[in-house]
Length: 102
Image (cartoon, rainbow, N blue to C red; front, side):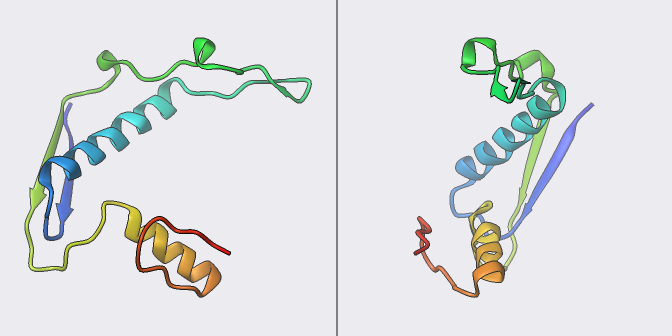
């Protein structure tokens, strides 16, 4: 089984874009297969990483990341979507990171 992700924008730093996409896919596998946050009587039972399970290499299928260059302006690999969500919520446009509201 292969997972495929395409990046349809001008790619400025291909290795960083691939790394971020791969990391997000692995994180998604970990969330789906392992991660949980346990509460006991309203108190966190998962109190540290020694008892917190995450994805391992053998949990993740082979990944193929294909970056397709286009004439679209370069954008972030998630930052722009987050900034747009903040704008839709607050009606305040942020043009640089990091976003500090207040």
